[in-house]
Every structure is written in C-alpha cells, then in structure tokens.
Length: 298
Image (tube, rainbow, N blue to C red):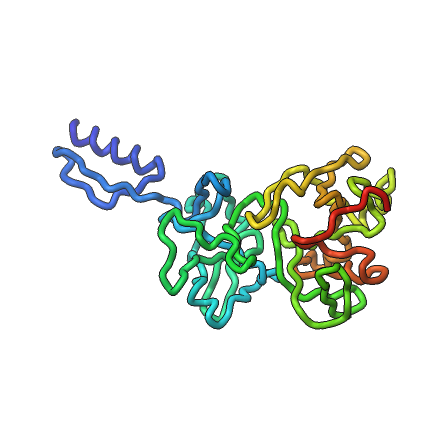
C-alpha cells in the first residue's frame, strides 16, 4: 500500500510539468533536482518588462537588419550574435503566454534558426563569450540590436527604401529623399510592417482619413494607444489621438499610418516600403528616431 502511495505521488508530480533527473528508492527520503520544462519563456524585467529567454534565462534578441525576416547577420557578426534554434519545438515547451504559431524555423548559412513573429532570434556573445543568464547588455548595441519582446508597438529596422516606382531611395538627416543605394533606419510595427507620416498633417491632426473611412484601405491608420518601444527611443514622444472613433498612434505629433499596397498578393509585407514614392517622394515619408516634430499648423 505504501509503494502504491509513493507511485501516485510521482505520477502527480510528473503531471504538473516538472521533470526529475534523479530519484532514490520509493521507501526512502526522496531528493530531487527539478528541471524547468520550458525551452523558451518570458522573463519579467524591471527595465524592459517581459522579454524572451531560453530555458536557462539567457536573453534573446532581434536584429534591425532583418527587416525582410531573413538572417542578415554575416561575417564577424556571427561570432558576437550566435543564432538561436530549437528542434521540434512544441507548445508544452513554451512558457507564459507564448504560442507555438508565432515561432517558425528558417535556414541560414550557419544552420537553422528560430524566428519569433518573423524576427530571427539571437544570443549576444561579445568577444565570443555569451552573456550570463539574466543579462541584457546587448540592448541598443549599434542602435540595431534589441531584446526580443512579445509586445513592441514600435520596432526599428534598417533596410533599403524601394518605392512603388521601383527606384531606390535614401534619406538625409534633413528628411530629404534622393535616389540612391543605402540603408535607412526606420520604424515598423512588431510584425515588421512599415509605418509612415503624411506630410500634410499637423500636430495631432489627421488630415488624410475621411469620416467614413473610405480611404483607410490605402493608407490605414495605425490603430493603437500602447507605447512599447526599444530603449533607444524616447517613449514620451509617442502619444495617441482619436480619429473617427479609432485610436491612432502618433510620433512627435505626427499621426502614424500604414501603406495598404505594402502587403503583396501573398500577404507578405516584411521589408516593403513602397509608400515612400507615392505619389512622389516626401509626401509619405517613413519615420526614424530624429524625425522632426509636427508643425502646429500645416
């Protein structure tokens, strides 16, 4: 009877999701080592809120250059930013509110890599030595590496601007667009969809959207009043306004929009920034950190 009771205890413990690596005889004192069942989980931090970590609490990161959803960390970057991967990931291996459908696997020159909501995941290993558990020293490195979070409302990407006219564009510090090859660092949402300003707007005033929302399909407003941004951005510069019953996020007073045709016929949009040339450059520019404040009247 005593043996059956002990067996029942073991069955109940296993059913809670914990795995035990060592067990003594059933009729003796049990000394167990508990192993965390999650291989990816959320860690709550004072500085950043919830962030993604591996099973040992090592921080995972997003890379701004991965605007298109591919791994763009090459050369010496690979040593400092090792890729993260899990083979055969299941829902049971995810902690907190993480869901399996947000994770996919891509193939890179250095092996398979796990992505989260389209962002390839990395560790940080400065000098080839990986960060210790709980550290977040990779945040903001080169203004391109950010702790992986499940709730960003603004992300930063670094990519070539290619308008709907098929031409390449670069942006000067004075917000002037010229044809040319070169990367621009600009804002997207968490999914990687490009965000735009409308040059005719003024501070906290949306001058584009019609009251019946009939033109919202072409330049949809970015509907949120939540502000979760990389640490290198000043979150106080983000506010929200109400536009015909909808909350629209603003940056430095500028209402924020999407461009509908950035989503192609296959539903893909990562890396697309076609709106920069519509109907001509500088009418619908992308946002970046040092974007000028909106005028009170325009």
